[in-house]
Length: 231
Ligand SMILES: Nc1ncnc2c1ncn2[C@@H]1O[C@H](COP(=O)(O)OP(=O)(O)O)[C@@H](O)[C@H]1O
Ligand SMILES: [Mg+2]
Image: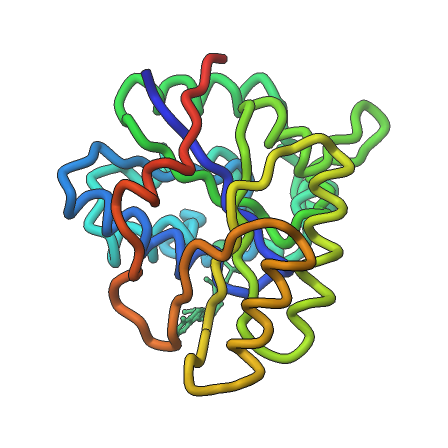
């Protein structure tokens, strides 16, 4: 039976891909059959007429994952805007059935699937005259819990609290927080960690320093955040 976790963040460019790559690298090093999935990616680079999903390519390079790029991402858009807007410009709007089918087929191949979100937790995926799909609809469709990647520095208490409140309001379980670009020599970063813990009641399961090449977390602890998923 395959297990999964959804990686979100307090915003775009906070480090979801960076942290996801380190997580998958660690799992693979421990002999785990680890897979990656992202439902919708925007801002893809066009190379020889083909849109290349940058996040998947980065994860593949860092983690050494043996998964083809086209199985890592279901929808790839060129415009670097929210998926709903990219689809309104380019066409090819997200269909939840395809996401479910693509994820199910990964479940046949991988035991631990790390799913990267798009943007922060409030992200419109499809908004047109037929349907409105928000990112949380994908989290719920796949029956996943989330890990939140947040910056270690100034302003993070506010963005973590808002992210947690939104996720809780949607009835989605939060398994932990990972502080990225964490500087353990900074009194503010250390205080952010303890304030986040006490204000949210959610554990900070790892701190990732700037330029870090390996995530410092016990493998059993890491594997324990993945839920067994039946779709
Ligand atoms: N801990 C880190 N050390 C060095 N660079 C980082 C770190 N975290 C993120 N970055 C860089 O910051 C940028 C945004 O990170 P990324 O993981 O792509 O964000 P997201 O996936 O949340 O949009 C990327 O260029 C990435 O390489
Ligand atoms: Mg990313």
